Each structure stands twice: as C-alpha cells, then as structure tokens.
Length: 280
Ligand code: GUN
Image (cartoon, rainbow, N blue to C red; front, side):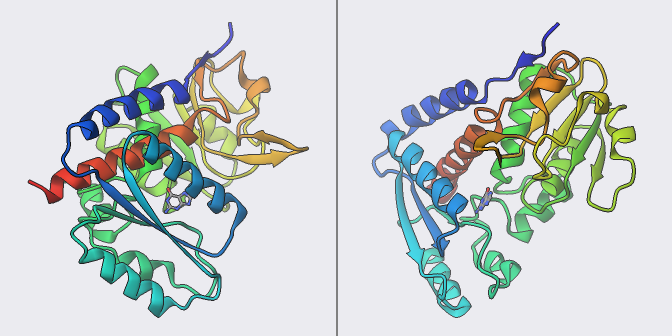
C-alpha cells in the first residue's frame, strides 16, 4: 500500500478560483501591501509568488522593497502610513528581517485589522483564547485544510508537531488544540522525538532539516504534513523522507506541491477577508 498524496496544488487552485470569483464582482479590488527588507534569496522568491498569485485572482499588491540597511524607524513609519491608508486592506512584512530589527516591535506596529499574516499578538492571543481572531497565520491555516482533506474527525487525535516556530509550530499547535487534538510540540531540546512521533496519528514536520523523518519514526496509516523546503544535492526536498515513509504513511503532502501553495492561498483569503472586514 502506498500513501495517499495530499495535493496542495489542486486544493490551493480551488481556493484561488473561489477568491477570484468573489473579487470579480467587487467595485474596488482588495489591496495587499508587502514590505521586503533586503534580498534574502528565499524571501525574494516567496514574495514574487505571492504577487503572481494575487495578480492572477485580480488582487492588487504593492511591494515596498527596501535596502538591507533600512533602519527600523523607517519601517515602523511606513507601516503606520499603510495602517492609515484606507486603500490598503492587508499588510505583511516578509520574514526573516535583517538582524538589526526587533521583529516583535515591527509586527506589533501592524494594525491587527490589517495583519493578514496573523502574527500580531492581538490575533495570536485571540487564537490562544479560542476566540475569533481577525486573522490566523496562513501556513497553519493551510495545514489545517490539508489535514481536513484526509481526516474527517480531528477530536482526540494525537498530533506531533516538529518545530516550535512563531510562524508555524506555535499557532498550529493552538489551532489543533482548539479542534480537540492532543498536541505535542517538539523542539531542538526534545529528547527521543522518534518515540513521540511513532505514537502520533498526525505528524507535522516543520524543522528545516532535510529528510529528517524516516520510516521508523511513524505509525502505520499516519497522516504526514511536510512544511520543509530544503535543497539537497540540487533538488528540493522536505523534512520527511518521502520515499522512505511512503509505504507506511496513510497520507502525505509532497514537497513541492503540498504546504507551499496552501500558504499563499490562505494569505490571499485573509486579504479578501480583510477587505470585507474593513468595508462592512
Ligand atoms: N517567512 C516565511 N513564511 C512567512 C510568512 O508566512 N509570512 C511572512 N511575512 N514571512 C514569512
């Protein structure tokens, strides 16, 4: 038996098609402002893809591509200007920022009503309280859709998330807890990760280590979500050793074509939601 492939590309394309239809009848097109500081290779590609897919569904984007040496005050000032601009619905600051920035200070500056990345403490705090935030971070939201594509009932499921980042591991753990899962979040100090993942119904790997999760790490029939994008011997691979686990897993996301396209689709969805939130 070979694992079912969870096709993130196809699920994301459906979501974008729905958004495109929604946007087509609006008098003014939703507008996403993107701030990119410096020229981190991966960030430049991510931002280009965000703009490309936004354009395809009829959404407006403005990119503020600032030099690496830009000081924090200038970015805070730009965010304030965008917060007050009624023509801007969503604001994202592409991460990571150069080392001279305090990332928390920058994120706190974004109005929670325009924080379509869902990183502002108002939004993360509301999620933590199991109340309704304005926005939930795009990658965890996309991962939930991928899991729900194969798991009809989440209540009581054991989930192990490998990686405790602010962007993926922490908000995803909260989301899954809010869906009545029993969640374990592992990090670099966790001992015997393998002993934990072997008991999990669902494993989400977001650790950034190429092919770390092997066949003897997983339970038969487990659902595996791979957030990793690593380059190994010139090829893109995930944090899960796809070929190794394929015969044991019940379902798995490919890399590329799994979580990546869903992250962008969810960001676009959040920006459309922002438009309606601000134009009630
Ligand atoms: N860097 C990696 N993922 C993300 C994301 O989802 N949003 C932003 N702003 N930066 C990122």
